[in-house]
Amino acid sequence: MKLHDFLVHHGMTANPFADEDAQTDPVFLGRCRTSTFHPNWDKVYGDPTNPATSIVFGEKGAGKTAMRIQVAEQIKEHNEANSDNRAFVIEYDDFNPFLDRFADRLSGRKRRDPTKVLSEWKLWDHMDAILSLGVTSVVDRLLGASQPSGSAANELPNDVSKRLDRFQKRDLLLLAACYDNSLTEAFQSRWVRLRRKLWYIPWQNWGVRGIGLAVKAAVIAYVFWWQSDWKLMLTVWPWLVMAVGWAPWMAQVWRWWIQAYGVSRQLRCVTRDVNPLRQVFMQFSGRDINGQPLPNKMRTDDRYELLYKFQGVLKSCGFTGIVVLVDRVDEPHLMNGSLENMRGLVWSMLDNKFLKQPGLGMKLLLPIELADFVQDEGHDFYQRARLDKQNMIPSLEWTGQSLYDLANARVVGCGEKHKSPGLRDLFAAQIEDARLIEAFASLRVPRQLFKFLYRTLVAHCQSHVDSSPSWKVDSGTFEAQLALFRRDQQDADQGLIAG
Image (cartoon, rainbow, N blue to C red; front, top):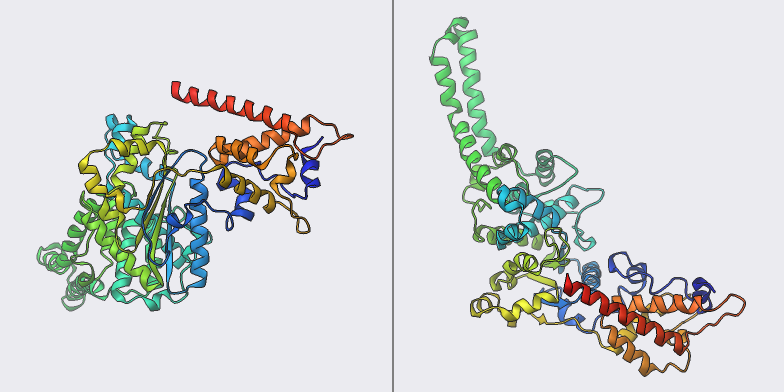
């Protein structure tokens, strides 16, 4: 008996339990993303007009990634309905590019040890990475990139250049100089295109260069036209006069080379070459860039100021808040399955000043194993993190009833238009609802539930022939598969503990 025939008989166009990863699950992405939520959804999602921080601990398969996708989707719908009260989404879930660049800056001895690499990772490195993702997303959309980075919720209005005043244009260009990280276009040419798009004209900077050109032209005219004696160029004074004329520009070159070098050194998770960055800095008018913060020191103060600037630019574009979705912290290759390494990456973010930044909502979706580290921390950690103020969910738990509803919603979502199948239709009447709920509760999380139900349906179909089909899973098959699945779970758990 074919599983496809079993599903078609019950009016389903797809297998509701075939996929286990929310990022690639067509049933979730196409049918259940906007209708099926965890009971703690409201506490995590909050109010997109005034984003707040939430910290969620959940075991593998509990639905953290699904929740991240749902938050981004709900904010997208909110933004479409509210043109001037929107939330900007930054999905901070791929750490590998940032960690790779960061590790390259360290000595060879430290680079070889992931624990030492992550012990050097600080809060300002997280802030640099978050600003890089956000700024790149904005610049992509301003320049009309064919595949802009970032969430689909971040669409910009068509009149951005009119909404920003001169100083906000300066701020966006300064942020782009430090953090724009496009992989499709050269840094300088992309920045120049952005400057032209924003109609930012650095007259003062061009004036300094114009002085040097004017002095040079005057010396050449005097020597070759007025005196008509090219041998004067062999004397010292023409070159000395030209050097004096170019002195202001040379002073700027030296000054901004020093600044660019500092940014290149301290911006550890974003690649910046010194000379191109110096050339970009020199395209700002002096009165616009003098005294502006730059990420050229090992501290958070400058990053907070740059974050304020980014929030100001977004506010003029209709975004009243920023939501940062932190997920998949256990997946970077530097983790190697080590909880200590995960702790080294995450713990620097647990700072109350950062988590309670006005207009910034951090949604941290973390492995349940890290919750044990929280319990072991001392007084200083709790004073710095103030987890009592962060909407913390100690465990993303599912009851048997909520798992039953989730499975039923997936079955309904896979139904044809003229049919309304339900989970109950798949099982024989001898298996009572109470038994289903009890069995589902023992599986704990959606991923294990989907694996079990898929195996059960396959086993049921394999135990019957096409000529004598059975359209409901009997009690014997259900109980036998449940026992086998629990045994496999225990073996897997023991293997992880032994490893």
